[in-house]
Length: 123
Image (cartoon, rainbow, N blue to C red; front, side):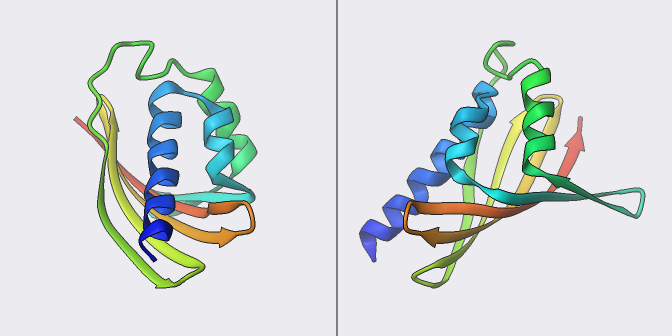
């Protein structure tokens, strides 16, 4: 189980690195092909397929390219079985600060995010 946890933490770190660097190749390693991202704005649910989000990530300046401070960390990991996990993380691309709820499944090729629900604070 310890190596499984290390593998899961490594997947989360790849997610953090991909976000900070704006690297969709890295993000593609951890996001399953059919994954979706969800958020709520003004009471309306937004459902964004992975590829549409990747296009957005590619079109914006990365936090790294802007030399923005990096502060990403795992808040909580909940593994309900050897193949499912829920990970709450916090990260930032100032002036936006994110709380992300990541649902992972473990497949033959490792831990994959199948959904991300997030909240953004702008300061």
